[in-house]
Length: 230
Ligand code: SF4
Ligand code: SF4
Image 1 (cartoon, rainbow, N blue to C red):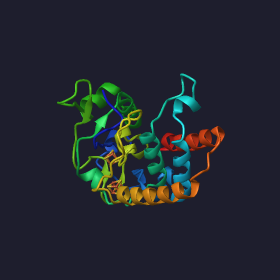
Image 2 (image 1 turned 45 degrees about the horizontal axis):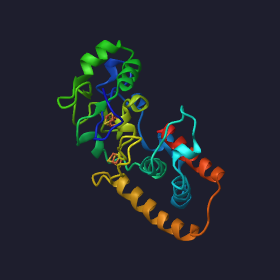
Image 3 (image 1 turned 45 degrees about the vertical axis):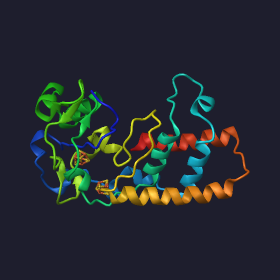
């Protein structure tokens, strides 16, 4: 199956199956104020400084242990974006766009969330991706079945697929493909603009200063923690 989302993808389910079609707000795990990522929020310049330092040495030199994941500068940029990102709750991503892809663990999580057997969840909510062998898409596509228009939120927020979690900064972690601004997402544009401006300022200010390996390690770890929290 899939891929931490290089393409746009999303989908959803709520509580017990019966609740999926959308009951009251009490059943909805929405975005915005409740978004745990909001706890991570920092100002753009502090995030830019973390990113600037994190990119000064490759991960292999800072985390030589084989069991430590190795991330690229593009990955750290995405992590910085996730810290700064603020969803505008416009609903565009959940109501338009491409099919939502699922990793095996997304399907398992969905089944658990819905309290149904995995086999049933796969049959009811997924279809094989016609272009990629072994990859699943949500069966119910746009608008996402799990989007609650009234509450402007996701009914399966805590169990939403990885591709929804990393939206709008999609990419395959470990690859050097640069972060792309998603023009359909106003939060994405705002984030990238803020980060780019802050990076320019930090580069100017940090010229001639070499952070210690410990500072670099701590910066990388702080950015990595953002990825774990999305
Ligand atoms: S975040 Fe939720 S509602 Fe939005 S696309 Fe993903 S699963 Fe659907
Ligand atoms: S398009 Fe962007 S701003 Fe709008 S709901 Fe989706 S993530 Fe939030």
